[in-house]
Image (cartoon, rainbow, N blue to C red):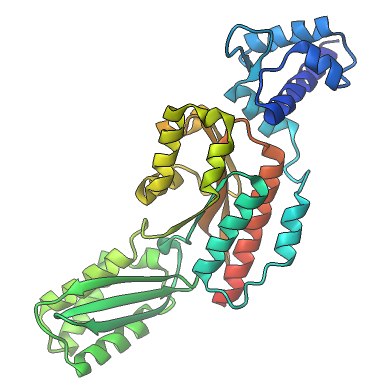
Length: 348
């Protein structure tokens, strides 16, 4: 008998979540009795809803017979009541089958993936470049620019290009620059950026000073530039469907809307947000589970995409807690998997 009651509570909770996701309105027992085959009376549904409210799974937004799911209810739903492969969007499958990436650069692919994910989920999507610390150096080059400055260009095995300008106190002649480029390439190529610490840089610096007629200041500036290029937070973020936030009734409240848009409008704040998301195959953060205050009215569904055998970047969506989790999770998983395969293929 106890198992039957528990099963019934789960079915009623699932029905309430489904109804609220599609209507954005509080759900009453009469609606559930009419629209869902629960096999019990409206009175029994009311009693079960009262129990669910006491347990913290339902909330009453204002004086009415209806209830809405709490963050706790959505967490229970995500963890126990859905299959993350069900309801895969047919529109997404069609878009993926027609996605031609052969003539696109890595950055363009990530931008297009963000747009594709937002168009099929109807939520704002976020894609981050692969993190530098988890990449390997494919090419490094110093290029002279005017005013005693050099441009340090670093290309990783993921195909991402990073660059910084360093100002020197003296010019480098073509012989010095050529030797410096050859030396850095030969000693840093294929090295994982995470492993290039101060000890490695200092050892290279000692060798270079012995071989080149350069002041120590120039070598130090070059390596300072390398450190800047390889910073862990030195990655770009691509957004898709920012305007979809405006379609959600939850954000009719201008204060809630401003908080979310403020995050989306500032790349550094978005980076801070992504740092709070663990590097897991899939992570769902619901409402108050988000560490950033401005996101406590939202849910985040993110997956890490991998290049080779390394987790290196994130892709996901931001939407209200009243999110169609099953379809979103399936879509995010699918696009993340494809993203990793494409970048791995292009980066060789």
